[in-house]
Image 1: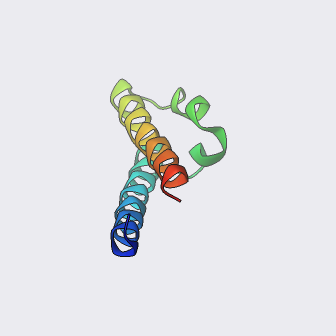
Image 2 (image 1 turned 120 degrees about the vertical axis):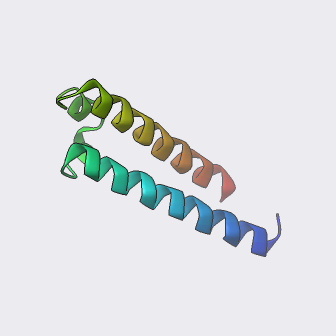
Image 3 (image 1 turned 90 degrees about the vertical axis):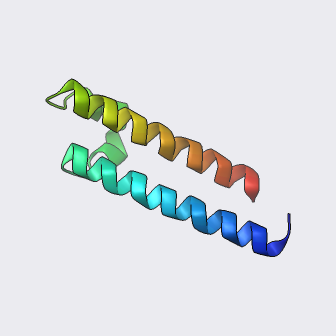
Length: 71
């Protein structure tokens, strides 16, 4: 992969990661999920919030895996 494509991929992954973190902070109403992970999601007050948190957490995990393989 060329340097420009690599940098572009890194930039896009960082933007997606920031979006996922922002949405998780909104849904969970704190950043405590960063240390507790899925355990914290079980304590959310609605199934919709739990589903949304699981979605964005999964997205974040996928982004981190892609970053590992792209380096």
